[in-house]
Image 1 (cartoon, helix red, strand yellow):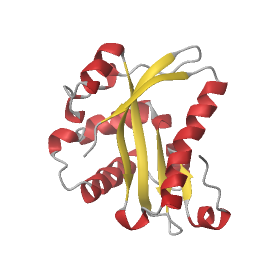
Image 2 (cartoon, one colour):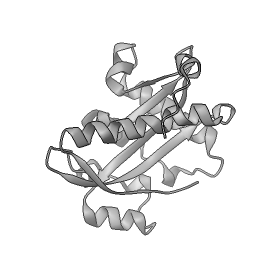
Image 3 (tube, rainbow, N blue to C red):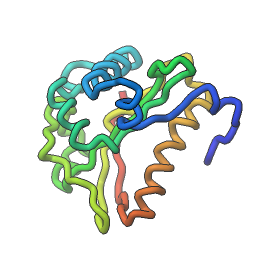
Image 4 (spheres, rainbow, N blue to C red):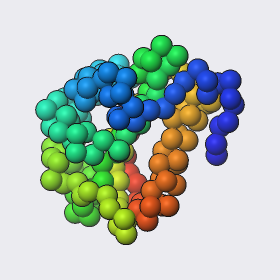
Length: 166
């Protein structure tokens, strides 16, 4: 599944929140830019599909490891993904389409710890249209697999994944 075209990878980089902060971004900057990117990419996105700004800042601050950002050669955000681990009852509501992102609260999400098995909800998988070539998408997708593999080595496992498509 890995897309290892080295030339293509040199143009782009996947970073986490800690790396963004080292680059001078704040969590608020990330939330603002990722929200704007989501609205740019998804025509039918409404406010009920988006977690309120201050809640998003709190969620990212509490669980920064649950997201990756794809930057171009100018360090502009061109794609990203994020997920939220949910307790079983919240996950079932999400799978059934009964929970909007605007209703999500930090206390619905367990902290990932070794020995745990979690259900995760991808709240965002976003890539600007002009970058939707398979190799660029592969870079973004590979970062999901890499994190899941890294966590498995740390005895943190994913049982089920869901997402809502727009």
